[in-house]
Length: 192
Image 1 (cartoon, rainbow, N blue to C red):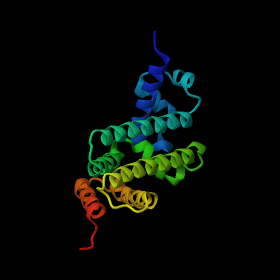
Image 2 (image 1 turned 90 degrees about the vertical axis):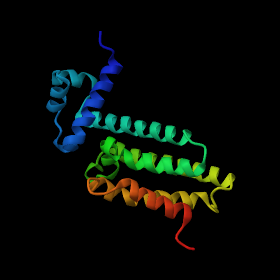
Image 3 (image 1 turned 60 degrees about the vertical axis):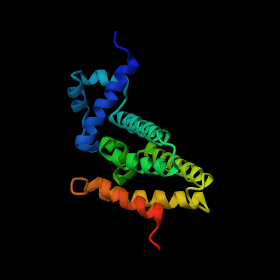
Image 4 (image 1 turned 45 degrees about the horizontal axis):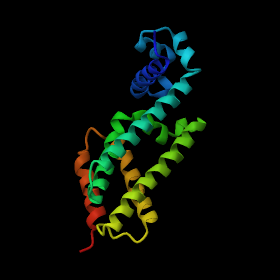
């Protein structure tokens, strides 16, 4: 007998790959059904629409990212290493989590109510993680941070500014080099 939750997850993962390849607009329920080698009616048993599947895909990928970030941060002790791991994992997740990032950045998807909710939650969670890393670093006298709220916002803004070039031109950029340069400025500044 088929476990319902496992099969839902299989649909979500498979649909995620198709959305990643064709985008939300061009993906059809027929393609999702073909990829799973099942009838379209079987998918409708689990999900009411393509939009509902996409929402679940986005939430699934958001959870994957959250887990990867938590693991990356907890795997090291030093606040500098925590920040470095956070930035690298976050920025390298683009390729794996294309649907999640499309949901956050694609203005053509704004008409879905859940997208704005996901965006707001993403921003809040990211600021909370950054504040925590900064607070830990200031407490350990590794970071010189007078206001962790503003510093977290500045880091978040910097990372968001990098997302577009990394996302659209990832083939021609050395991501590691760019991230290391940004981290050098973040950690050591530019003033002598």
